[in-house]
Amino acid sequence: MSEARPGRLGVGVIGAGRVGAVLASALRSVGHAVVGATAVSAENRDRVDALLPGVPVLGIEEVVERAELVLLTVPDDALGDLVRGLADLGRWQAGQLLVHTSGRYGTEILAPAAERGAIPLAIHPAMTFTGTSLDLARLTGCPFAVSAAAPVLPIAQALVVELGGEPVVLAERDRPAYHAALAHGANHLVTLVAQAQRTLVAAGVQEPGRYLGPLLGAALDGVLRGGEQGLTGPVVRGDAGTVAAHLTALAGLGPDLADVTESYRHLAGVTTRRALASGRITEPAAARLLDTLAAPTAEPAPAEPRSQEPSRTPEPLVVRTRAELRAALASLPGSRALVMTMGALHEGHLVNVEEAARRADHVVVSIYVNPLQFGPGEDFERYPRDLEADVALLTGRGVDVVFAPEDAEMYPADPLVRVDPGPVADVLEGATRPGHFAGVLQVVTKVFSLVRPDVAVFGQKDAQQVALVRTLARDLDLGVEIATVPTRREADGLAMSSRNVYLSAAERERALAIPRALAAGATAAEAGRDAEAVLRVTEEVLGAADGIEKDYLVLVDPETFLPLAADARGPGLLALAARVGSTRLIDNMPVELDPRP
Image (cartoon, rainbow, N blue to C red; front, side, top):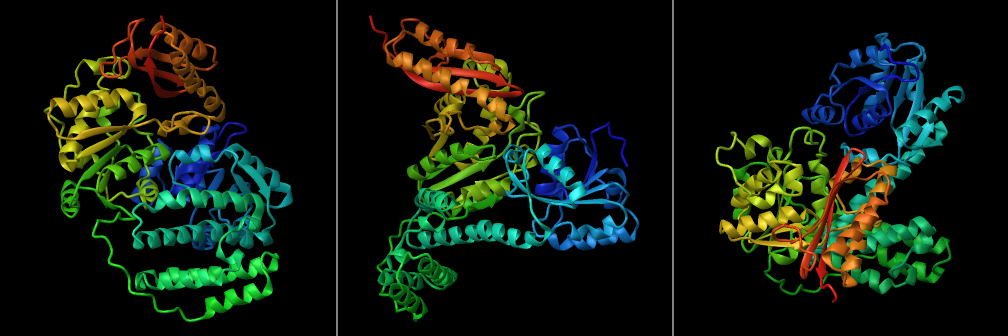
């Protein structure tokens, strides 16, 4: 086994997929040494490179030989054979901590290793994993089901605490039912919501997510707070006629949605019986409902001719090459909107997507982490990448095509012709990150040329970038409208950013001084204070905060990004960049200056 310093362990990962790589990265962040990982697929090898840089990819037996703590993060069905096979080969070591993350099993599955002196522990995080650094922040406060023999249970609990989670002791016999409950709630919820999306699309609703999001959010909050008492709808009203109409309408949507009708019948029946048991409906009402659900579905009336307007595809087509992109765009007549991103999508990106869907017949989203806009020492290598999670987030939101090229596709060779962004690129972000905007405009020009959008939508948070892109489109006659969407903020006011996941809980709290300072400046502008006073108020609020290392704080013209005179009138932009810990954050706020005499 490895020689780790006292109190720290050499950790080996068997199965560095979405769960294993993240948990190993979390253990590494608190001082444990990750001595090796197995990664068969190219995706998992990339994940090791991103989350566990410098950790060697090894064979299973070598990982076991080197490690004092072995994380077994393999599929449930493979776990037993793997443990037994290594035991037969005599690879498990006395005193070695053996930890699996299956919800289904306790420690009994690890018995062959325990017989050879290993210490078996079972921990299961109750969360879904993207396999990116985004998961590291989500581990904080996550409940882990912990099972272990009484003498070593504190070891399992301490391990969970180091991961940032909350250990919840669960008896071995209860784990199968526990895991079934989580799978039933999470996995089948996905199936149910996807069925609702498909049905809405078939009914002519172009953006089903806009309808389902608020409704499902309220329903989930209600059931988590009050259980079945939060149920609403035709079943608890005893409205058998509406249920019959639903079944008829679903049957009329064709065989492709037959699974939706089947699910509706079954779940409405379960809901009826639960409503009866809880006293929400009477026995006669329940009988009418159950009879309706059991009866053959009436033939639907002839459907009205549908509008010939193009409908939004619920799941976007993902293309990786320029040729695939050309073919996909050729099948999309009408106007076209583009949203450019680097992935790691969040609600801030989705607001841009929604605006794009309102402005054009079809929406293209590009997902590409552009190396030309990262300088030496910046976070290009660790920038979160999870195309599968991004596409899932875009599904049902009116996106037709996702263009996600590899570096070799975007830059087959080092570009000889470069875009010069001009003087606006030399101040603020440009001064701090030399060459950044040249790299941004290089990729923007390429993607504009490939997609040929009628409109491109950007977020106001990257105000200097938007100003440069707007100038690019105007000066080079690119024929694309540049639209902006106000900055989307978290509930606490922090501007949404893919880099927010790098913040610890304490850093996140300190970072709130940034939006507070900008809001104070905007309030001063509304009160009729001049530009000098607006900037001074903003500086005072930011300066009073601990743990904020200011890069710049300026009040500028939103087009030229030159500082405004003290007596300036009209639009201005408060722009701010600061480091909180090792994370650099930017934010800005438009103001309207009308200094009172």
